[in-house]
Image (tube, rainbow, N blue to C red; front, side, top):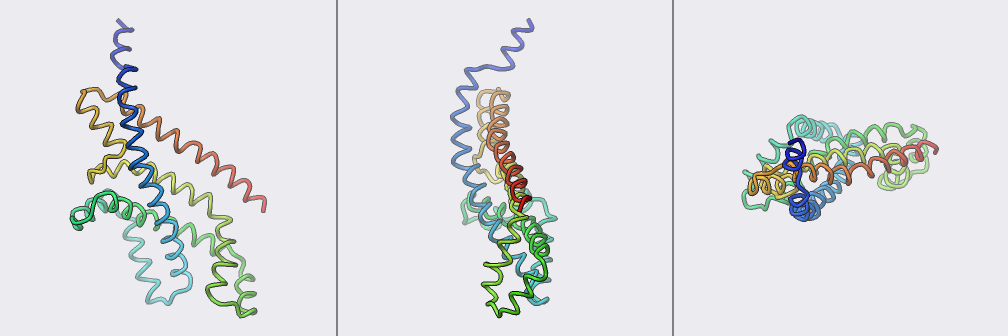
Length: 221
């Protein structure tokens, strides 16, 4: 009887049937959303950190307030608000934009800590040499800041990847959506959701290992 219960709980035929659907959802939606949202978050986060560091107060303070509001608001609420406000947009670009902007608020704090860790002498030397503002940032400050922030930025990318199931709420057929859809059709959910979790693990664990190795290597310099 125990064997019958075990066979009913997990069926390799159902697992083989649902796996291609999950893999397709991962490649077409989950992975695409993570990659493009990460690019948005990394670029926008750096811009925000630079604004907060060197822009006039009448610009830096409103930017800070907006970022705080976004960071303190659940990403699910943001997804639903933008989705139902901008109904002329398709769901995937909305999901990418919302995830990217949401995580830009966290990456901006990471960048800010890295920028503040750059020795004051570097700023003074750039000023003494009359280096242009842009060159000071992109040739001196940003490279040194990235040395200490890359591992933390990678951690936020992994967190974003694990938050992509929230795209389910705006009808993007990512992996969790595909697993739920399969379960509703077949009335069996175990294989679909177990495989979904394994795909997430297979994609995120190697990245976390690489980040730890990168952090140890950067700590030597």
